[in-house]
Length: 345
Image 1 (cartoon, helix red, strand yellow):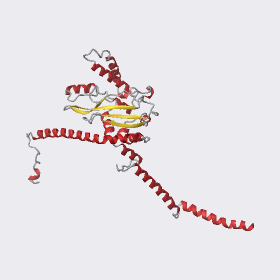
Image 2: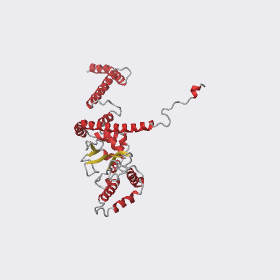
Image 3: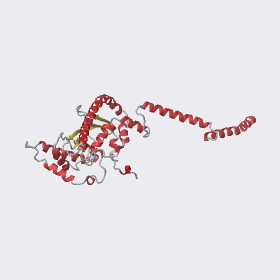
Image 4: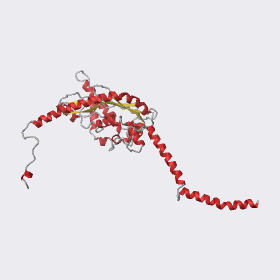
């Protein structure tokens, strides 16, 4: 072996140099700039597409089964649906994303509307869940929310088996207790919270008898380390970690923020693509293809099938050709008999 092959490869940065730390710091600053740039792009995108979605929403609601088909075609959504959820989801007639704060486009509201006549589960025709983007400086950033008070038409029709109501009541009691501090209010609220915690001691599997949580328990999702789903930017790190430990296991629905982003950033903007792919058997199609073009393709296929059937009649050895030959032979055999009958007359 040559002496060159035994030499160690040169290090990228000299040992003891402060350059790596300076580079990491500069990269961190660049990441913040990238994030700010992405927010500005999102602001422009929302401003540009909002009027288009406003025209699209009523059109999709006029197509029977549009949104159930779209949701069923989206694996990231469909995996959260239980068999008991399917009839309720089949009555969904609209999905809408609202961005209420122009200065913070990462905040949004998801609205899910149901057929008024076919909906036998919810008192409300539209279920709304709001999400806020929150940041704990140097610790964490992401979505938080508040539990939705779903008004079920009866206990038997409560697909969450009482879990959404339990979480909402516990959250409400905590909120009232906190708001009442220093004002002489909040007295007597501890009992409701304690009752909720007694039930919470049971695992989710025990509470739901080992079954998968319903999709509708997602409406009770709150988020990481929040009592109210409304952390303030720059919250103290120790206080944040303490809340994380206190609220650990509160959420019935794991990764509720991921599902919210799937609906807002994937399912909603790509709904037409998912619907058309479902019509074509899951094959990917160009985004420029319209429903009318798909109809024309189906008509062309039907015409081709008719042409194939006509061609088959003339193909030697085909079943239709053989039947035609037999019919002609039988007619020829009958001809002498017919002539004989005519001569006797």
